[in-house]
Amino acid sequence: MTSFRELLQNKSFNHTLEGPSVSLAAKASGHELHLRLDAKDRITAAAYTGKFDPWLSSLCHLARNKSLAQGLALGLGGWDREFSADPLYWELKEEQVDRFVFPALELFRATLDVLRGREYLYREQSPLICRCFGVRESDVVSHLKETPDPTLETLSKQSKAGMGCRSCVPQLKRWLLLHDGGKRSHHFKEKPRAAWLLEIDYLLSCFPQSLEWKMELKSFRGSQVLITHQRAATQREEEEMGKELQKFLSAATDPDLGFFLTRKRTPEE
Image (cartoon, rainbow, N blue to C red; front, side, top):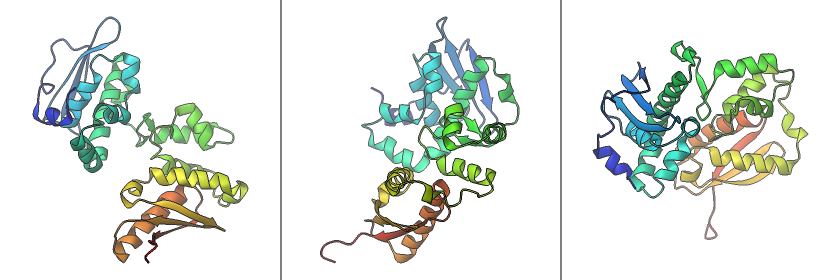
C-alpha cells in the first residue's frame, strides 16, 4: 500500500499522459488533469501537468482502476480509508484539507463530467456550497423557487446536499431561513427537546474544532444550550471559540437559541 509520505516524495503522477480519454485545465491553479479510460469506462491511468501537488498525486493514485460510477462517487472518505494508518496524512488533512483536497476533487469531477458530455462546466459557475455532491448556490436557489414548501429534507432528496460530511448544513439552513422570511425563527419549540438534543449533538460533532476541544453537549434549558470543553484555553480563546460555535450552531438550528461554551470542571475543582 502506498503511504502519503511516498506520494509527497514521488512525482510519478506529475507528467503528461499519452492518449488521454479526457483532459481539463483549471485556470486558477494552472493544473491540467488527464484521464485514460478503457472500453468498460474504467480509469486505467491518471496524471496531471503543472506544479507538483501531493493532493492531485494522491487523487490520481485513488482514481486508478475505478469505474466511472466509482470515480463520480469518490469523496474525502476515499482519502480517509486509503491513508487511515498514516499519521502524516491526518496531520496535513487538518491543516490543508479545505485549501487542497476540495479543488483537486472539483477538477476531477469536472473532468469526468466533460467526459460525459456536460459542456456547461466550461461556463462560469455559481459558488459551490456542498462540495461532497457538487451542489452550487444556483441549484439551491432554483430548488427554493420551484418547490412549494422547501425544507432541508426536500433539498437533500433532490440534490443530496448536506448528506455527505454535513459541513454545509448551516449554510443550507440559512438559505431556507432567508427564503421563508424568518417565519420559522421559533421552530425549535415545534420539536421535542429529545429530538433537538440528538440534532445538536450531531451538529456539534460536525463543528471543526469539536474534537480538538473535546466538546460535549451538557444541557438544554429554555432556549439556552450549554456545551463544555476540556481544552486548557485562555478566557479570550474560550470567548472567541464560543462566538464561532454560536454562529455555527444557531445557523444550523435556530437563531433564537443561545449556545454557551464553558470548560468542564474536574472533581478536584
